[in-house]
Length: 158
Picture 1 (cartoon, rainbow, N blue to C red):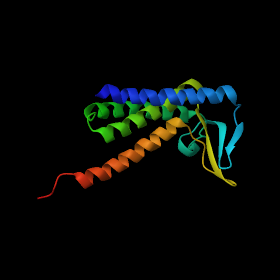
Picture 2: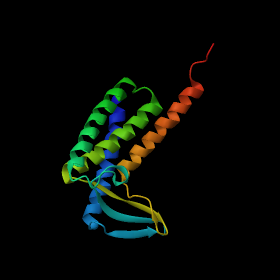
Picture 3: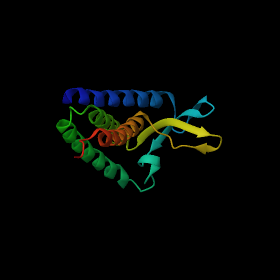
Picture 4: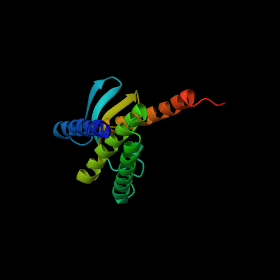
């Protein structure tokens, strides 16, 4: 049962890395292409974490976020092994694991995370992100949903 969840994580990693390689091979850093009036493909190098948190920390953030990703990935894999029969929970953890490892590969290979999905409304821009970030966000959303489902369908109180 664990192998199917690890396969899903690997699929997230592969799709994430393919999309990033496409962007690297077709765009220069900071180059963008308007796809819709509210969406651009825009190659960005993010040395920080989500929303460019600590992006100007002088380089130490690369190793800090690398260590956090490694520790989190080991912990997620351990929890996934113990709960691989809990479909929604395991799905959520698999998405988070794949996303974390996808961004970890970037940090190790380039020293930054490659972001390229850029949504905006007029002059208001949401920070650029990538498929790994999307997988992490979906996984986190599923964890929240699963926590409500568990309470709703949990054991009856007598």
